Image (tube, rainbow, N blue to C red):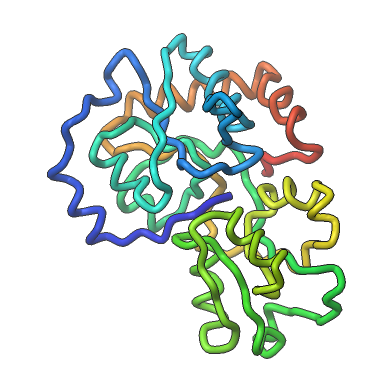
Length: 261
């Protein structure tokens, strides 16, 4: 579950750069973060996007009888790119939060993931978010511009050492190298690593308590004025769930329910 800490001044600076066409075009452009985010969105050897979120996009577009395409964009600039009309909808595991809703709109959620801290099974230390002292001297990895990073900064600033990384893969590389003690991530996304042979030495140490800052699930991000596109996407998402296609797609990637309540 990837997350943005919005910087209002950066976003505001993008408003005057809009030159591309709008969501009213024949093609609906889905903005996807350029880095691999298995099993949600990753390019195969031919450069074609695949994964759970891509399959859901295809199902939604089929339901709308719409032609759709993927636009690669850097994660830390994905909201400014949406507002600059580089594409029409963010489709990249973005949490629906009150802060983001001040700037953009969202579809209904299409999945939800708890947030976790992962560490080595060999590390027998006890960590408790209700006892900040248990994090004293601990180095924690988190993806930059993520809500997990914001959580750690707010709760453990001055107690633990927070290291920020551009991608989840970079976090994984450093915990494997022993440069960090814990890794903050969305629970669903980190399952892909934990299920692999190289992930067998690691486990979820803590499921972070849900707070408002973590939002209301992940959904498609839209410009506030694109109400017609929002209605079309919501109707298509509802139909895909009702038909059983959502569950069929999910079973190809997960052994758990990822929609939540």
